[in-house]
Every structure is written in structure tokens, then in C-alpha cells.
Length: 340
Image (cartoon, rainbow, N blue to C red; front, side, top):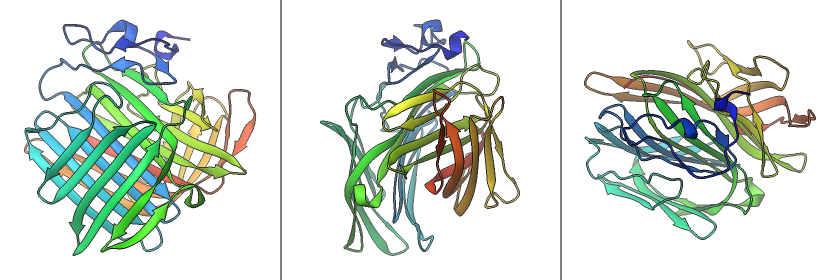
């Protein structure tokens, strides 16, 4: 097993004092251990915080990101039955006023500008997500607590493209969520009965100018077990690091081999296939029910994201080799292509 696949067990700095990748930071862990004080060149640094809560009625996605030359805050409420999107996006030139912590949960995040209120507040045992915005003449208000149960394991990994270009990611799913969402004052509640789970994507790194990635995630209850899927591809290929794993009843089963995402780029709403490249450990089909397109136009660059929400079916293997069925698990799969 290479250094990029070693399991870490102690706090470590992501960067050297000179802004290069700290060799001791390479590896993965079951809880966040990295301090991400980025010192790389301006314009290459990326700080990303994305929360998505899914439940039987829909999905709530909140983003707060700093790309050096641009800050981005957004909120999306998706109705699973109708496919209706209510969304507010606020770009901020030069990311003025943006501040993200160097560690997972290291500080509260609060944003309120141009009709969008967004807050990620750290509380005992979890993170409270709050948002308020108007979209299509509708007022959306949400207050959701995403819990972090004691001992719950997450997938944390450093992707080392080179000594100068690298990324730390903390992917955390199957986090129990409870709360209320109101649209024009009409409330819908979420909790265990609605299979409400939160997912955090925490990213800090110095990225290459051209980026292509796939990401798939899902959380839910299958045959009495809480199952979380986490898979990444393309930008990790060949680095010796992977963003792949399965969380079963709060325990992470890390997958060290790359996975293959097969889909029609001309129509991402067609079925996807996700499989492990060197074994039968991952054999999944993904049937999209909704496509969310996002374009981030910049002066000399830009990003395009195709995020499909839908259901996974098939099976995965845990660390013991036992097969786990995941039929009907709700989540998403996406493609991002960007020139940053």
C-alpha cells in the first residue's frame, strides 16, 4: 500500500511553511485531522464548503466557496415529486468578506447579501444549517440540524497531484438531519421517518487550472441498515489516492481502488453505471430523475456542473467481502468540468 493510501491517526498540517504539500499529510483518515492553512499562489487556491440534505420530499443544497478571485454563495431547494427548483446564487468579486475555517467545523460561517441569508453554525453534536431567500416569487426558509453522532466515521483524504497542486477533502454522509423547511410559510418537517440525512463536502486545496471530476453520494436506510455511498473519479485517477468508500451504520469501509463512471455526456439524464476498476467491489446503476445544471461564467475561465439526483441500485462489498444491497438509495451523481 503506497503512502497515498496510508491511514493517518494524528493531526497534521496540509501545507509546509512554503505552501507546498506536506509529505506527512498524504493519506486518509476516518475523522478530519488536517489543518488546511493554504499558502499557494493567488488564484489557484480553492476553499469549498457544500452541504446537501436529502429526505423523502426533496433536497436542500447550500454552498459557500472562495476561489480567491470569486466568492460564491448559493442555496437550492429541490422538490422531488415535481422537480421544481427554487434557487438563489450570489457571486462576489474577489471573494470580498468571505472567510472559511482551516479545519472541519472550525468556525461558524454566516453570509447575508443581496437577498440570500446563509449560516452554518457549529453546535454541540452537530451543525445547524439556516437559509432564507426568495426565488420565483416564493419565500424559502430552512432551519435544519445535521447531527454528528459520537464515533461516526467519515472519509477524509488528500489528493496529491504534485508538491504544488493538491486537495484535502472531507466527505461526510449518513449524518442524521432534523428540521423544518417553509415555502411561503407552509412548513414541511424532516427527521428519521423521512429518511433525512445530511452530507458535507469540505474541500481545501491548490488546484490545477483544468479540472474534471465525477462525484456520487447517497444516504439512506436499506433493509434496516444505514448505508452511505461515496465515490469520486477522474481527478483522483493515477494519484494513488481515492475518494471512495461505503459507510455502514456509521463505520467507514474504505475502497482504495479507482472507480469508473460510465454515462452519456450528451444526455446525463440517461442511466449511469459506477463500477470498481479492479474488482467487483462496486457494481452500481444510477437512474437520474432530475438534472441540475450550474454554470459559473468568469472573465477568462468558467465551470459547468451537471448534477443528477436519482436512485442507486446494485451492490457493494464491505471490508470483509460481504455483499451489501443498496436498491432504491437516493442521492446524486455529477460531472464538473472547469478552467479555474
